[in-house]
Length: 234
Image (cartoon, rainbow, N blue to C red; front, top):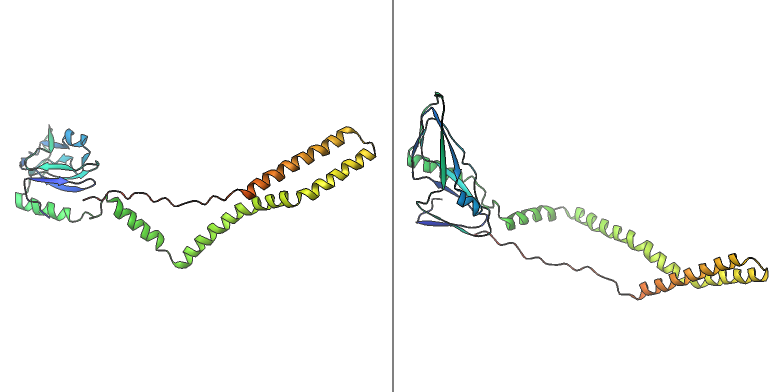
């Protein structure tokens, strides 16, 4: 689509083709090197296709400009956008290629139509990826959900079993150990063995208190956090 008017506002992540007002007539013993203006590149703009101007070229120059910045950029008609450096060399024998203004403009318009309308538009790209991910068959989605639940159960089950064992079987184990201490006292065994059993009782009581605290604490449920959507390119 050709843009009319004295200026054009290039939105963030937008792309536009610009054509030079000048016509370049390059002899076959000269090659040109075209680059985007430094002030434009500092503002976050990039030219996709500038570069070599071939020997024998006779016509205008065009470039596809992409705005990689976060701000809109105003392009005024008649504003310089390229710098061209010419290098002399031996005659190359290159054929003369001439493009008149109208023909060259039509070619550039046709090239611009080949670019995707969603180029660099993050919301469109995210939507396309989401459709592919969540567009899986139902059975595949169920398998993924069941797999996640099984993995979660594999983590929780051993912890729950340990808490249950410490809390509900602890008193019986303490009673058995206490009986062993009494037997050792009756048999006048060494004090080291008695002290070792007492330490086991103390450790078991600590484990029971820890298990009781874990049982009484409320569980923590993860919450989904909605992120802000990226700004849509206009």
